[in-house]
Length: 517
Image (cartoon, rainbow, N blue to C red; front, side, top):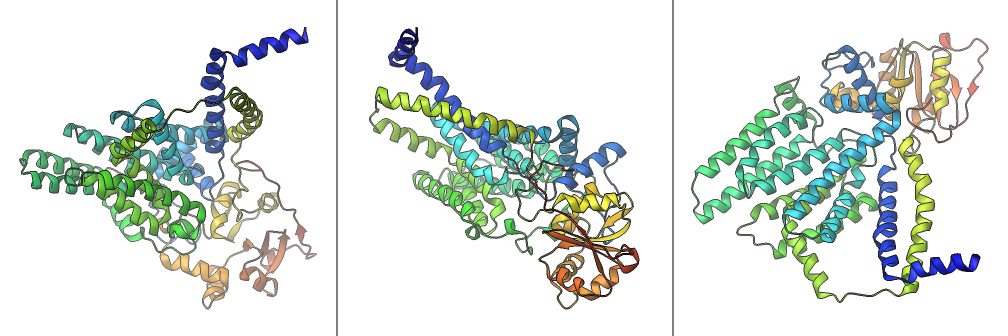
């Protein structure tokens, strides 16, 4: 019986139809599972708690313009320019918890990659070439898709915009789909500025090309009218011109302690993909007819240059390269494939491939299940342990608590209702630059730091133990530690500390899933 079973399996493996089945089903399926495992691996951004909480508050209150009831140092009106994305995130979380947020991220990535796929197919790419371009697109956005955050909506909207502009090259009436897109974009994330800039570059480059050819003005008038309408459409938001003024005063490359506003060469994980797309862009540009496809050259080079200086723009560089230079990229790939001789794999190699695919399935399926149900809150090294907020809730602390910048929105989610924080990741939306700078000075105990702490009249301070502020307060008679762990410490005013002066020791938390205990 065993001999017959082995004979049947062997017959399946050695027959051409058997190998076709393995190569077409098992190998592609295992490759897809590997991709899904990487894509679904999600880590919590320090602002995730705030985004979901604020979106839930908007849903519950039925109003967008909420007052800031979380921070006692906020000193400017709250411009919540990401309100619509927060509503979507909150709705996804309420429907399916952390899994809902992961599935939301997957849906956005899938829609974005569908745009890349459609651009490739519009250029006559066969299935394998379209898959390759789509895979490159996924690599290009992966650094910005590790977390569930409003920036994902900018990736999606930019992908749709590139698809619309490519199709508008054949039919200019498609441009009138851009204004509705900009309304949605302006209410989900500030990246709509990238969209307006790209649309403006596209119109300017096509105007120059039309002028060189001596084309009529009717088409140009329609193009620039659509551009003006798209820009004006961004005014359809709860703040009107206030949104423009807010972004004009806040968007820029100089932001202290925010790595993604720095250059790509500071992180090899960012520099590597940028170099790959720079090579792709240069290769494609050399083949492009710059007299007729000026927009396809200018836009990727523009975002590539800015993306080198500001790393958070790298996804737009990748998508613009694959989108606008798709004809040249498709041609290069398919020419090289036709030039290469087809290779026949031996039966042994195909058998080893099948075994490797089965091993991949055994590893990825359990990991994929974990990824779909858990957003890792300890993937970021600067995340606090959960026991600190458990201590806060257990003792029902109330009043004012000085918080570390990255921990503010986690505290907002878990804190008692009578406790307010001093600083959180909303930064310029509720705090002036002076307030942010004074907090940084306070953390580092610079010249104005301690006087600023005294002026806050805070009841508690919760900061990382390695900060200079923690060491300074531990020697101060005005503050007493009431909770301490390997990562953070909570100080209280003497009148609020336990009478016996006991310090509760908390363990460092193990890895857990959003939103935590």
